[in-house]
Length: 453
Image (cartoon, rainbow, N blue to C red; front, side):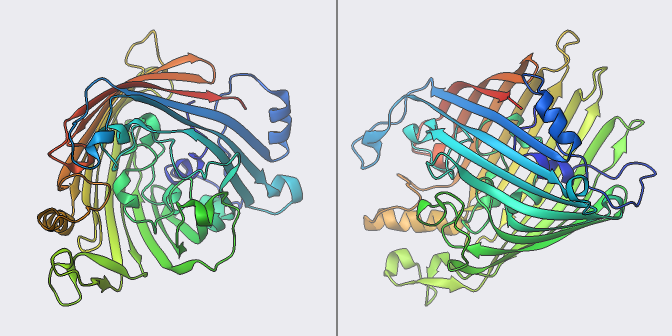
Protein backbone atom coordinates (compact mmCIF):
# COMPACT_ATOMS: atom_id res chain seq x y z
CA UNK A 1 0.00 0.00 0.00
CA UNK A 2 2.67 2.53 1.01
CA UNK A 3 5.82 1.11 -0.51
CA UNK A 4 7.91 3.94 -1.95
CA UNK A 5 9.71 3.49 -5.24
CA UNK A 6 13.04 1.95 -4.25
CA UNK A 7 11.75 -0.40 -1.56
CA UNK A 8 11.52 -3.42 -3.90
CA UNK A 9 15.00 -4.89 -3.09
CA UNK A 10 14.41 -4.87 0.68
CA UNK A 11 10.90 -6.27 0.17
CA UNK A 12 12.37 -9.20 -1.72
CA UNK A 13 14.96 -9.83 1.01
CA UNK A 14 12.19 -9.76 3.63
CA UNK A 15 9.95 -12.31 1.85
CA UNK A 16 10.57 -15.97 2.79
CA UNK A 17 9.81 -18.76 0.35
CA UNK A 18 6.17 -19.86 0.19
CA UNK A 19 5.08 -23.11 1.81
CA UNK A 20 5.52 -26.06 -0.54
CA UNK A 21 7.07 -23.71 -3.08
CA UNK A 22 7.98 -24.88 -6.55
CA UNK A 23 11.59 -25.28 -7.70
CA UNK A 24 10.68 -23.92 -11.09
CA UNK A 25 12.92 -21.10 -12.32
CA UNK A 26 10.87 -17.92 -12.57
CA UNK A 27 10.98 -14.18 -11.92
CA UNK A 28 9.57 -13.12 -8.49
CA UNK A 29 6.49 -10.95 -8.64
CA UNK A 30 7.23 -7.24 -8.95
CA UNK A 31 6.09 -4.63 -6.43
CA UNK A 32 2.59 -3.35 -7.27
CA UNK A 33 1.64 -0.58 -4.81
CA UNK A 34 -1.85 0.87 -5.04
CA UNK A 35 -1.97 3.97 -7.28
CA UNK A 36 -4.10 7.08 -7.11
CA UNK A 37 -5.66 6.32 -10.51
CA UNK A 38 -6.34 2.93 -12.00
CA UNK A 39 -4.33 2.84 -15.21
CA UNK A 40 -5.29 0.35 -17.95
CA UNK A 41 -1.94 0.93 -19.66
CA UNK A 42 -0.06 -0.18 -16.53
CA UNK A 43 -2.16 -3.34 -16.33
CA UNK A 44 -1.52 -4.06 -20.00
CA UNK A 45 2.26 -3.57 -19.59
CA UNK A 46 2.45 -5.74 -16.46
CA UNK A 47 0.80 -8.65 -18.21
CA UNK A 48 3.64 -8.42 -20.72
CA UNK A 49 6.39 -8.20 -18.10
CA UNK A 50 6.89 -4.42 -17.85
CA UNK A 51 6.35 -2.77 -14.47
CA UNK A 52 6.54 1.05 -14.53
CA UNK A 53 6.00 3.02 -11.29
CA UNK A 54 5.95 6.77 -10.66
CA UNK A 55 5.63 8.41 -7.25
CA UNK A 56 6.39 11.55 -5.25
CA UNK A 57 7.48 11.79 -1.62
CA UNK A 58 7.51 15.21 0.02
CA UNK A 59 8.85 15.98 3.50
CA UNK A 60 8.38 19.19 5.50
CA UNK A 61 9.86 20.01 8.92
CA UNK A 62 9.95 23.21 10.94
CA UNK A 63 11.59 23.95 14.29
CA UNK A 64 9.30 25.06 17.13
CA UNK A 65 12.27 25.73 19.43
CA UNK A 66 14.95 28.40 19.22
CA UNK A 67 18.51 27.36 18.32
CA UNK A 68 21.65 28.08 20.31
CA UNK A 69 23.00 31.55 19.51
CA UNK A 70 26.40 33.11 20.13
CA UNK A 71 29.37 34.86 18.60
CA UNK A 72 31.47 31.72 18.15
CA UNK A 73 32.09 30.97 14.44
CA UNK A 74 29.19 28.88 13.16
CA UNK A 75 26.70 29.86 15.86
CA UNK A 76 25.86 33.19 14.23
CA UNK A 77 24.24 31.38 11.30
CA UNK A 78 21.88 29.22 13.35
CA UNK A 79 18.23 30.19 13.10
CA UNK A 80 14.73 28.96 13.80
CA UNK A 81 13.21 27.95 10.50
CA UNK A 82 11.49 25.37 8.34
CA UNK A 83 12.37 23.46 5.21
CA UNK A 84 10.85 21.26 2.56
CA UNK A 85 12.54 18.43 0.66
CA UNK A 86 11.35 15.64 -1.55
CA UNK A 87 11.81 13.51 -4.60
CA UNK A 88 9.93 12.28 -7.63
CA UNK A 89 10.94 8.79 -8.69
CA UNK A 90 10.44 6.37 -11.56
CA UNK A 91 10.98 2.61 -11.40
CA UNK A 92 11.19 0.26 -14.39
CA UNK A 93 11.23 -3.51 -13.87
CA UNK A 94 11.29 -5.83 -16.88
CA UNK A 95 10.48 -9.54 -16.71
CA UNK A 96 12.50 -10.89 -19.62
CA UNK A 97 10.94 -14.30 -19.14
CA UNK A 98 7.59 -12.91 -20.26
CA UNK A 99 9.07 -10.51 -22.78
CA UNK A 100 11.74 -12.67 -24.45
CA UNK A 101 11.61 -16.14 -22.92
CA UNK A 102 14.73 -15.73 -20.72
CA UNK A 103 13.75 -17.92 -17.77
CA UNK A 104 14.21 -16.26 -14.36
CA UNK A 105 15.88 -13.09 -15.69
CA UNK A 106 14.76 -9.56 -14.82
CA UNK A 107 16.24 -6.07 -14.92
CA UNK A 108 15.59 -3.21 -12.50
CA UNK A 109 16.15 0.52 -12.89
CA UNK A 110 15.29 3.60 -10.80
CA UNK A 111 15.78 7.30 -11.49
CA UNK A 112 14.97 10.18 -9.13
CA UNK A 113 14.91 13.93 -9.03
CA UNK A 114 15.39 15.54 -5.62
CA UNK A 115 14.58 19.07 -4.49
CA UNK A 116 14.63 21.31 -1.41
CA UNK A 117 16.72 21.31 1.74
CA UNK A 118 16.59 20.02 5.32
CA UNK A 119 15.89 21.89 8.56
CA UNK A 120 18.40 20.23 10.91
CA UNK A 121 21.35 22.29 9.73
CA UNK A 122 19.55 25.48 10.80
CA UNK A 123 20.06 24.50 14.45
CA UNK A 124 23.54 23.02 13.98
CA UNK A 125 22.95 19.31 13.33
CA UNK A 126 24.88 17.58 10.51
CA UNK A 127 24.43 13.97 11.63
CA UNK A 128 20.74 13.25 11.03
CA UNK A 129 18.54 14.92 8.44
CA UNK A 130 15.09 16.07 9.49
CA UNK A 131 13.95 15.13 5.97
CA UNK A 132 15.43 11.92 4.57
CA UNK A 133 14.70 12.77 0.93
CA UNK A 134 17.57 15.24 0.81
CA UNK A 135 21.03 14.90 -0.68
CA UNK A 136 22.72 12.53 -3.09
CA UNK A 137 20.48 13.45 -6.01
CA UNK A 138 23.00 15.70 -7.74
CA UNK A 139 20.57 18.63 -8.17
CA UNK A 140 19.65 17.37 -11.63
CA UNK A 141 16.31 16.58 -13.26
CA UNK A 142 17.15 12.88 -13.66
CA UNK A 143 19.61 11.02 -11.42
CA UNK A 144 20.21 7.31 -11.96
CA UNK A 145 19.96 5.40 -8.68
CA UNK A 146 20.57 1.84 -9.89
CA UNK A 147 20.35 -0.35 -12.98
CA UNK A 148 21.10 -4.06 -12.76
CA UNK A 149 20.09 -7.52 -13.87
CA UNK A 150 19.07 -10.43 -11.67
CA UNK A 151 18.71 -14.15 -12.36
CA UNK A 152 16.45 -16.10 -9.98
CA UNK A 153 16.79 -19.90 -9.97
CA UNK A 154 15.17 -22.92 -8.30
CA UNK A 155 11.96 -21.21 -7.24
CA UNK A 156 13.75 -18.34 -5.51
CA UNK A 157 16.32 -20.47 -3.70
CA UNK A 158 19.19 -18.80 -5.55
CA UNK A 159 19.37 -15.23 -6.87
CA UNK A 160 22.39 -13.67 -8.61
CA UNK A 161 22.55 -9.96 -9.45
CA UNK A 162 25.10 -7.63 -11.06
CA UNK A 163 25.24 -4.09 -12.39
CA UNK A 164 24.97 -0.61 -10.90
CA UNK A 165 23.64 -1.40 -7.42
CA UNK A 166 22.93 0.26 -4.08
CA UNK A 167 24.53 -2.13 -1.60
CA UNK A 168 22.42 -0.95 1.36
CA UNK A 169 19.20 -1.64 -0.54
CA UNK A 170 19.98 -5.36 -0.12
CA UNK A 171 22.12 -5.50 3.02
CA UNK A 172 21.08 -4.11 6.44
CA UNK A 173 17.80 -3.17 4.77
CA UNK A 174 14.13 -3.24 5.69
CA UNK A 175 10.99 -1.89 3.97
CA UNK A 176 9.79 -0.77 7.43
CA UNK A 177 12.40 1.95 7.98
CA UNK A 178 10.63 4.58 5.87
CA UNK A 179 7.47 4.48 7.91
CA UNK A 180 9.41 7.41 9.40
CA UNK A 181 10.86 10.64 7.98
CA UNK A 182 14.00 11.49 9.95
CA UNK A 183 17.28 10.49 8.35
CA UNK A 184 18.66 8.70 11.40
CA UNK A 185 16.11 5.96 10.68
CA UNK A 186 14.43 6.29 7.27
CA UNK A 187 16.17 4.72 4.31
CA UNK A 188 18.46 2.86 6.72
CA UNK A 189 19.82 3.67 10.19
CA UNK A 190 22.47 6.27 9.48
CA UNK A 191 25.25 4.39 11.23
CA UNK A 192 25.43 1.80 8.44
CA UNK A 193 26.57 4.45 5.93
CA UNK A 194 29.02 6.07 8.33
CA UNK A 195 31.67 6.14 5.59
CA UNK A 196 31.42 7.39 2.03
CA UNK A 197 32.45 3.89 0.92
CA UNK A 198 28.98 2.39 1.46
CA UNK A 199 26.64 2.79 -1.50
CA UNK A 200 23.24 3.66 -0.09
CA UNK A 201 20.21 4.90 -2.04
CA UNK A 202 20.29 7.12 -4.10
CA UNK A 203 23.97 6.32 -4.74
CA UNK A 204 25.20 3.18 -6.48
CA UNK A 205 28.40 1.50 -7.60
CA UNK A 206 29.23 -1.51 -9.72
CA UNK A 207 28.32 -4.58 -7.72
CA UNK A 208 27.79 -8.33 -7.64
CA UNK A 209 25.52 -10.08 -5.16
CA UNK A 210 24.42 -13.68 -4.63
CA UNK A 211 21.65 -14.79 -2.25
CA UNK A 212 20.76 -18.35 -1.32
CA UNK A 213 17.84 -19.73 0.69
CA UNK A 214 18.84 -23.18 1.98
CA UNK A 215 15.50 -23.51 3.78
CA UNK A 216 12.24 -21.62 3.54
CA UNK A 217 12.84 -19.12 6.36
CA UNK A 218 16.63 -18.63 6.16
CA UNK A 219 18.78 -16.77 3.66
CA UNK A 220 22.50 -16.13 3.32
CA UNK A 221 23.82 -13.44 0.99
CA UNK A 222 27.15 -11.91 0.12
CA UNK A 223 28.66 -9.73 -2.57
CA UNK A 224 31.49 -7.55 -3.79
CA UNK A 225 31.05 -3.82 -4.41
CA UNK A 226 33.97 -1.78 -5.79
CA UNK A 227 34.41 1.39 -3.74
CA UNK A 228 34.14 4.48 -5.90
CA UNK A 229 35.64 7.68 -4.54
CA UNK A 230 33.08 10.47 -4.13
CA UNK A 231 29.89 8.45 -4.62
CA UNK A 232 27.83 11.09 -2.77
CA UNK A 233 29.54 14.08 -4.37
CA UNK A 234 28.55 15.88 -7.55
CA UNK A 235 32.02 15.96 -9.13
CA UNK A 236 31.86 12.19 -9.76
CA UNK A 237 28.23 11.13 -9.54
CA UNK A 238 26.09 14.18 -10.23
CA UNK A 239 23.79 12.32 -12.64
CA UNK A 240 24.66 8.73 -11.68
CA UNK A 241 25.37 7.92 -15.34
CA UNK A 242 29.17 8.01 -15.06
CA UNK A 243 30.08 4.34 -15.44
CA UNK A 244 33.88 4.36 -15.82
CA UNK A 245 36.02 2.70 -13.15
CA UNK A 246 38.69 5.40 -12.95
CA UNK A 247 37.65 6.37 -9.42
CA UNK A 248 37.57 2.82 -7.95
CA UNK A 249 39.85 2.74 -4.89
CA UNK A 250 39.01 -0.61 -3.28
CA UNK A 251 36.07 -2.86 -2.52
CA UNK A 252 33.43 -3.54 0.11
CA UNK A 253 32.55 -7.17 0.90
CA UNK A 254 29.37 -7.66 2.96
CA UNK A 255 27.85 -10.89 4.27
CA UNK A 256 24.46 -11.29 5.92
CA UNK A 257 22.20 -14.07 7.13
CA UNK A 258 18.69 -13.97 8.55
CA UNK A 259 15.94 -16.08 10.02
CA UNK A 260 12.48 -15.06 8.81
CA UNK A 261 9.88 -16.98 10.82
CA UNK A 262 6.12 -16.53 10.59
CA UNK A 263 4.24 -17.20 13.82
CA UNK A 264 0.56 -17.19 14.75
CA UNK A 265 -0.83 -19.38 11.94
CA UNK A 266 1.06 -17.41 9.31
CA UNK A 267 -0.03 -13.94 10.49
CA UNK A 268 2.94 -12.71 12.57
CA UNK A 269 6.09 -12.33 10.42
CA UNK A 270 9.50 -11.63 11.90
CA UNK A 271 13.01 -10.94 10.61
CA UNK A 272 16.22 -11.54 12.59
CA UNK A 273 19.32 -10.60 10.62
CA UNK A 274 23.04 -10.47 11.35
CA UNK A 275 25.70 -9.04 9.08
CA UNK A 276 29.18 -7.59 8.67
CA UNK A 277 31.30 -6.05 5.96
CA UNK A 278 34.93 -5.14 5.37
CA UNK A 279 36.28 -2.17 3.41
CA UNK A 280 39.64 -2.79 1.75
CA UNK A 281 40.44 0.87 1.17
CA UNK A 282 42.90 2.41 3.67
CA UNK A 283 41.36 5.00 5.97
CA UNK A 284 42.91 7.48 8.36
CA UNK A 285 42.75 6.96 12.12
CA UNK A 286 40.39 9.34 13.91
CA UNK A 287 42.93 10.10 16.70
CA UNK A 288 46.48 8.80 16.27
CA UNK A 289 49.27 10.20 14.14
CA UNK A 290 51.99 8.13 12.45
CA UNK A 291 53.95 7.75 15.70
CA UNK A 292 51.13 7.03 18.15
CA UNK A 293 50.47 10.57 19.36
CA UNK A 294 47.41 12.76 18.88
CA UNK A 295 47.56 14.18 15.34
CA UNK A 296 45.51 17.18 16.51
CA UNK A 297 48.21 18.01 19.04
CA UNK A 298 51.38 17.15 17.09
CA UNK A 299 50.19 18.37 13.68
CA UNK A 300 51.65 15.23 12.05
CA UNK A 301 49.87 13.14 9.43
CA UNK A 302 47.17 10.78 10.63
CA UNK A 303 47.90 7.06 10.97
CA UNK A 304 46.63 4.96 8.07
CA UNK A 305 44.52 1.86 8.76
CA UNK A 306 44.82 -0.73 5.99
CA UNK A 307 41.15 -1.73 6.23
CA UNK A 308 38.01 -1.09 8.27
CA UNK A 309 34.76 -2.87 9.05
CA UNK A 310 31.15 -2.58 10.15
CA UNK A 311 28.69 -5.01 11.81
CA UNK A 312 24.95 -5.05 12.44
CA UNK A 313 22.11 -6.88 14.17
CA UNK A 314 18.56 -6.01 13.07
CA UNK A 315 15.31 -7.45 14.37
CA UNK A 316 11.63 -6.89 13.70
CA UNK A 317 8.63 -8.92 14.81
CA UNK A 318 4.90 -8.46 14.53
CA UNK A 319 3.26 -9.10 17.91
CA UNK A 320 -0.43 -8.52 17.16
CA UNK A 321 -2.58 -8.93 14.09
CA UNK A 322 -5.85 -7.07 13.56
CA UNK A 323 -8.65 -7.92 11.17
CA UNK A 324 -7.50 -5.93 8.12
CA UNK A 325 -4.87 -7.43 5.84
CA UNK A 326 -1.37 -6.15 6.67
CA UNK A 327 -2.47 -4.59 9.95
CA UNK A 328 -0.99 -5.18 13.41
CA UNK A 329 1.61 -4.09 15.94
CA UNK A 330 5.27 -4.54 14.95
CA UNK A 331 8.40 -3.88 17.01
CA UNK A 332 11.87 -3.13 15.65
CA UNK A 333 15.30 -3.01 17.28
CA UNK A 334 18.89 -3.04 16.12
CA UNK A 335 22.55 -2.26 16.70
CA UNK A 336 25.18 -1.07 14.22
CA UNK A 337 28.79 -1.21 15.46
CA UNK A 338 31.58 0.30 13.35
CA UNK A 339 35.37 0.18 13.45
CA UNK A 340 36.12 2.55 16.37
CA UNK A 341 39.47 3.63 14.89
CA UNK A 342 38.10 5.00 11.59
CA UNK A 343 34.42 5.76 12.16
CA UNK A 344 32.57 8.91 13.17
CA UNK A 345 29.65 6.94 14.66
CA UNK A 346 31.14 4.19 16.81
CA UNK A 347 27.71 2.62 17.23
CA UNK A 348 24.02 3.31 16.72
CA UNK A 349 21.14 1.66 18.59
CA UNK A 350 17.54 1.98 17.44
CA UNK A 351 14.05 0.88 18.41
CA UNK A 352 10.61 1.47 16.93
CA UNK A 353 6.94 0.54 17.20
CA UNK A 354 4.65 0.52 14.17
CA UNK A 355 0.92 0.04 14.78
CA UNK A 356 -1.26 -0.24 11.68
CA UNK A 357 -5.04 -0.54 12.00
CA UNK A 358 -5.22 0.28 15.73
CA UNK A 359 -8.59 1.95 15.11
CA UNK A 360 -11.10 -0.38 13.45
CA UNK A 361 -12.64 2.53 11.52
CA UNK A 362 -9.20 3.38 10.05
CA UNK A 363 -7.69 -0.04 9.18
CA UNK A 364 -4.91 1.37 6.95
CA UNK A 365 -3.72 4.24 9.15
CA UNK A 366 -0.42 3.75 10.97
CA UNK A 367 0.82 5.04 14.32
CA UNK A 368 4.61 5.08 14.66
CA UNK A 369 7.34 5.87 17.20
CA UNK A 370 11.09 5.57 16.63
CA UNK A 371 14.23 6.34 18.64
CA UNK A 372 17.88 6.22 17.64
CA UNK A 373 20.89 6.69 19.91
CA UNK A 374 24.23 7.52 18.28
CA UNK A 375 27.57 7.23 20.09
CA UNK A 376 30.47 9.12 18.53
CA UNK A 377 33.83 7.30 18.37
CA UNK A 378 36.03 8.23 21.33
CA UNK A 379 38.91 9.14 19.00
CA UNK A 380 36.75 11.79 17.32
CA UNK A 381 35.71 13.27 20.69
CA UNK A 382 39.31 13.38 21.95
CA UNK A 383 40.56 14.92 18.70
CA UNK A 384 37.92 17.67 18.83
CA UNK A 385 38.78 18.43 22.47
CA UNK A 386 42.46 18.75 21.50
CA UNK A 387 41.60 21.04 18.58
CA UNK A 388 39.54 23.28 20.86
CA UNK A 389 42.47 23.59 23.27
CA UNK A 390 44.75 24.38 20.34
CA UNK A 391 42.32 26.85 18.75
CA UNK A 392 42.01 24.75 15.59
CA UNK A 393 39.09 24.18 13.25
CA UNK A 394 36.80 21.31 14.22
CA UNK A 395 35.71 18.48 11.96
CA UNK A 396 32.22 17.42 10.85
CA UNK A 397 30.87 21.03 10.99
CA UNK A 398 31.07 20.75 14.78
CA UNK A 399 31.00 23.80 17.08
CA UNK A 400 31.84 21.75 20.17
CA UNK A 401 33.00 18.28 21.19
CA UNK A 402 30.77 15.55 19.75
CA UNK A 403 29.79 12.75 22.13
CA UNK A 404 26.31 11.27 21.61
CA UNK A 405 22.86 12.11 20.29
CA UNK A 406 19.24 10.93 20.38
CA UNK A 407 16.61 11.46 17.68
CA UNK A 408 12.95 10.58 18.29
CA UNK A 409 9.95 10.68 15.99
CA UNK A 410 6.24 10.22 16.60
CA UNK A 411 3.90 10.16 13.61
CA UNK A 412 0.46 9.17 12.39
CA UNK A 413 0.15 8.09 8.74
CA UNK A 414 -3.31 8.77 7.31
CA UNK A 415 -4.43 6.69 4.35
CA UNK A 416 -6.30 9.55 2.66
CA UNK A 417 -7.48 7.86 -0.51
CA UNK A 418 -6.16 5.15 -2.74
CA UNK A 419 -2.48 5.84 -3.46
CA UNK A 420 -2.21 8.87 -1.13
CA UNK A 421 -0.74 8.85 2.40
CA UNK A 422 -0.34 11.98 4.55
CA UNK A 423 1.73 11.74 7.75
CA UNK A 424 1.81 14.51 10.38
CA UNK A 425 4.85 14.07 12.63
CA UNK A 426 6.89 15.35 15.56
CA UNK A 427 10.69 15.06 15.77
CA UNK A 428 12.89 15.73 18.79
CA UNK A 429 16.70 16.05 18.76
CA UNK A 430 18.62 15.60 22.02
CA UNK A 431 22.20 16.93 21.70
CA UNK A 432 22.00 18.00 18.03
CA UNK A 433 25.14 17.03 16.13
CA UNK A 434 26.03 14.98 19.24
CA UNK A 435 27.08 18.23 20.97
CA UNK A 436 26.19 19.07 24.56
CA UNK A 437 26.62 22.80 23.90
CA UNK A 438 23.62 22.89 21.51
CA UNK A 439 20.04 23.20 22.68
CA UNK A 440 17.66 20.32 22.09
CA UNK A 441 15.42 20.90 19.09
CA UNK A 442 11.75 20.04 18.47
CA UNK A 443 10.19 20.03 15.02
CA UNK A 444 6.71 19.64 13.58
CA UNK A 445 6.16 18.52 10.02
CA UNK A 446 4.55 16.13 7.62
CA UNK A 447 5.39 13.55 5.01
CA UNK A 448 3.25 12.88 1.96
CA UNK A 449 3.47 10.01 -0.49
CA UNK A 450 1.53 9.92 -3.75
CA UNK A 451 1.70 6.88 -6.03
CA UNK A 452 0.77 7.96 -9.56
CA UNK A 453 1.35 4.64 -11.38
